[in-house]
Length: 259
Image 1 (tube, one colour):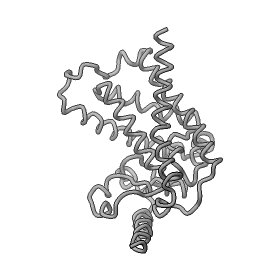
Image 2 (tube, rainbow, N blue to C red):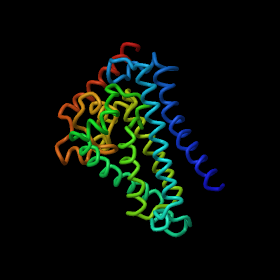
Image 3 (cartoon, rainbow, N blue to C red):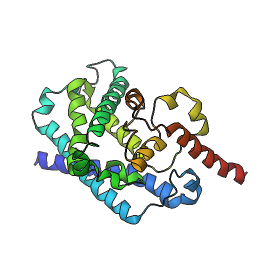
Image 4 (cartoon, helix red, strand yellow):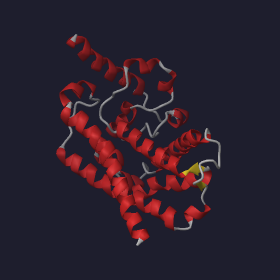
């Protein structure tokens, strides 16, 4: 009975978190404040309701796969041999945020190489094409994967818990932060302030324009959180920086006109 109730709670949590993050972004940018945020739009192409429904369907399916992986860790042998710890004092408190940063770095590396691999035929046609049906992605597309790709995506939790010690609460922080960044990457709007372009962070982290270009052109910009691997491997779209600057300049032109 415990296992059954835990499963229900876990599935409910995964789906509720996705709807809260992606649904809130959709409501703000596509419904409630759509007139204001139209100046932030990356592509002029309008979102289609059929796309929303497709993205929602596949994202819920992905959340079920993610919940299944979590259950495998909880009730299977994986959890017993992993480096998950429950006593918060088992490691120094400063290690808690460090473990999240390490998890993000590990995830970015895994995602880059997995992502590049599934762009190779016939893997692309079999697994990844479903995600690329969203050529003009919305927040709902953040988890819109084929079931097979969802399984590959879910492996990151297993990899992280076997590579680094991580407190159980930091797994929640890591996965929630991952979803939040994913929603931003698929937002369809660039919300970074103008001054961000001149900061060192621009050279390190991805933006919504960065991932949007991947959906628009189907290749390049394979990274998830950071630009490291794309720049190192020469897979970043050569027009990324100029495209980003054009989007920001076009957005600022609206504000200057309003003033």
